[in-house]
Length: 382
Ligand SMILES: *Cc1c(COP(=O)(O)O)cnc(C)c1O
Image (cartoon, rainbow, N blue to C red; front, side, top):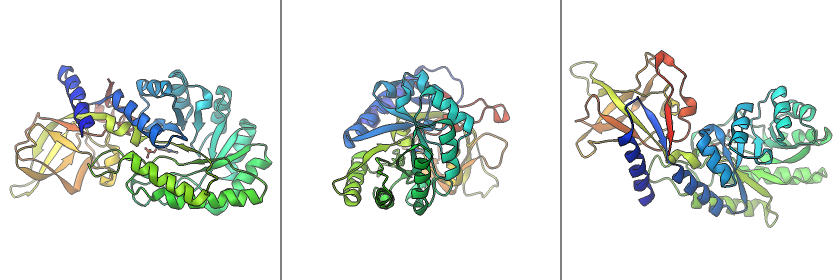
């Protein structure tokens, strides 16, 4: 994989020149550009709404705005960041289904006209504060096949969606379409099929009520390459297109995607340092390896060992042995991998640098402000 080698080289070069100042994330904009163009090429009729929460670095937002991307936002802070990056309000959706009414009013003042809802109460807030806007209804998705499911909390049962959208219509909003999220880091390219079947059924139901929906929001779920066997974006594109054809025939609606991890995950690498290596007893079969980054420093997605980052050391050619990997804070929850120990070189030493790969998504945004006095994860965009 040529691209990966080049990425490693550009970031490694940057790291060699960097002044020592604790763990940091380095993101390569060139990789994000390539990823964006791959999405645009694979799904040419689909608008990309970058899920800002994955990594809101201003340089990333600016690049994507220049490339013509739209943005899925969840708060006024994210909307302001996107506008500051040069995008216009017609390129922004307020995709959080849980919004304060005064935030909807602010978004409306900014010119945002596309909103998500998954119940009638949320539709009422939007009708009061963002009159005439487009609303899409998020439906539940079980998230099976994904490594970081987003199920249960967001979306209503598909049977309820027509009622929510009809309510929007009654209150003077534009019932625009359906959205779902198949779960983040979705490894099953067929995961979109079931949700699209539900979406098509809702389109038919609404048509019978005299309301024609226009849009399906296919959400995120596109993976980062934590492992080499992750399918390429083209494979996802083909599977999604097949599912659209199957369920909508030749009346394929307008579609959008909201990639977060799939756009920025591979573009970033974290450099961290081994702080301590120890054993709990003489005959302890595994070493404990403590890094200067943990769950509270940006690696929150190791929760329940959900996301398993590739970790490189300078000694990877040496013999490997399992170890428990943990962060530096005084919280016993700050253990990264224990149930499934991590293989690291037996020669690994205190003070060694390690590279945590595919760490461009959901790391800086998850890092705490100063737990135990550790500063938040530094980030450089090159
Ligand atoms: C977080 C989120 C996304 C991005 O998901 P990824 O799996 O990172 O692509 C997309 N849409 C919504 C509504 C989200 O909350």
